[in-house]
Image (cartoon, rainbow, N blue to C red; front, top):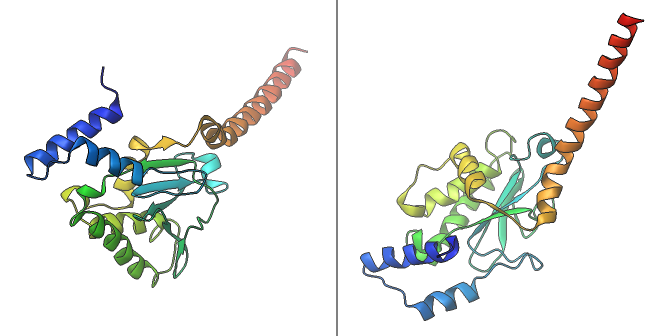
Length: 206
């Protein structure tokens, strides 16, 4: 049986073959080794990463802050008004990530980096309004500039759904950390509701 990662590699190789740019197994392995992400070093080449935003992510675990990694592994994010941060995600270490393929960007790796730089030049002149003109807007603009996968119609809403559909948790602990706040909030509310409902019924039948 072929696992998802190997199947994805095979499909990409077949796609490259059809485009006349076949990549050998050795080249594929060298590429994978050179650009392998490293969570401990916060090395995230060609990767969109997610960190939780206090309160917002506690209530809505799918919502959070996004950054995008360049070929050198550095992560760019629109974390403050009029400023693009590098390797300094506004809300801590990434808990989720989505690895993309730079060969699907126009002009490959160079096009990937240029797209991120172009998006940075745009958003370093913008205010961050949280709900609009935000980190999702920044990353989707980068994907549009590099014409990732032949598309230039990405926006914050499409990116939100695509990321949550394709992302992976860094570890089991980051999964727990993502969902624990909401679980605690719901549990506390449930206990309070049940407590008062029980007391109300007790009063009625006394």
